[in-house]
Length: 301
Picture 1 (cartoon, rainbow, N blue to C red):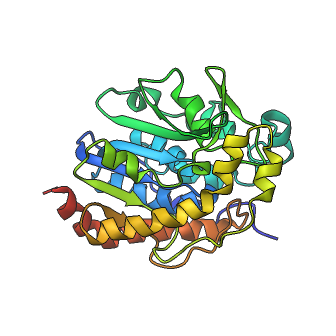
Picture 2 (picture 1 turned 60 degrees about the horizontal axis):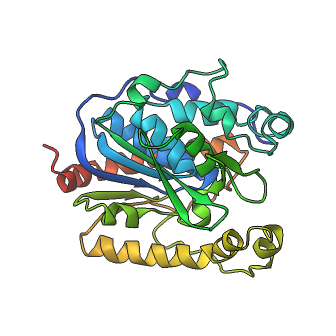
């Protein structure tokens, strides 16, 4: 049985990121608990004063990006490693409160059991933040930007709400689910916005591609939402195409792709805290190893 407490919680860094912003767009892939890799990477970036002016994230990338924009070093890791085996987050109580075995609202709502999000800093207008979700009525990708949508926290919840196991999240009368159902890595948004400097953080090693499976489960489960069902059914093929194009753009110098230096073996709802902690540390170490390259790409002196 996996331990219920991470043995090296004391090693997770604490502190607040600096105020200097760097031009460019940071793109964060999702992956549920594989997002611990991203969280380690982002903490190392903050400790080294790399705070990008625009952040766009999908699912776990949106959750980690939220804490990156709020400048709270280590908050994401402390929540995920500290509460992974709390049934209010994952388990029976989550099912009761959030109607899902994994209650994303546990991370975004302030229930007084862990350090609150620094909403004042998060809401500052000098820094853009976009959470990516999927419109269940038409299957299209929705980009919710802080300061321009009705409820960015609700949008983050929608972005991180997994299909099949979680209920849809209503925003302005429209149901939404995980942004990864329609766009798993939103680098195209950054390109279309005209950013010259784009940094993409993956949660899988560069060679990873998903095995394509039949689409009957999605088409049957979401038969009342046919456009969404088809988009979900096509998502694996679309993801593999995205991975290929990211590698091409990286090779051409159009963006900087950063990814785990070794294969990631944790599952989406991994319960082994030592494995999750090791993944966090891998992200941290990979960032430090690439630090000078990142600074050179972004023009940081």
